[in-house]
Amino acid sequence: MSDTAGVSEPSTCGGCGTGVEDRPATWSLQVSERGRQWLCERCTRDNLRSIEGKLDEAWW
Ligand SMILES: [Zn+2]
Image (cartoon, rainbow, N blue to C red; front, side, top):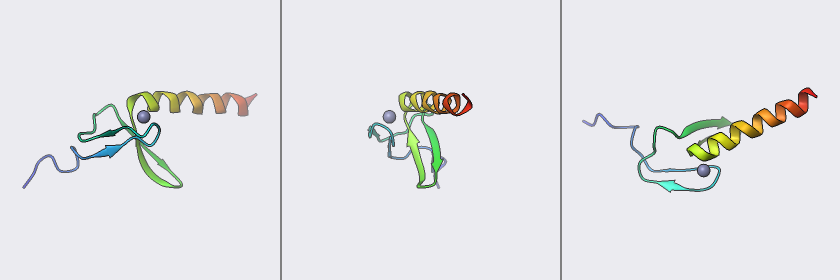
């Protein structure tokens, strides 16, 4: 039995391609039409900015 199942697992950032053996809690799971992918902390911020930017463009 393992209490860490699903917590510590190899992951690759869907944005910059950075690979890690143990995924930090700062990574976020992005769900899109193409499936699920993890984004590292930096790419998560960039992604949020791009989303906000798109929303601004759509709004105006
Ligand atoms: Zn990244």
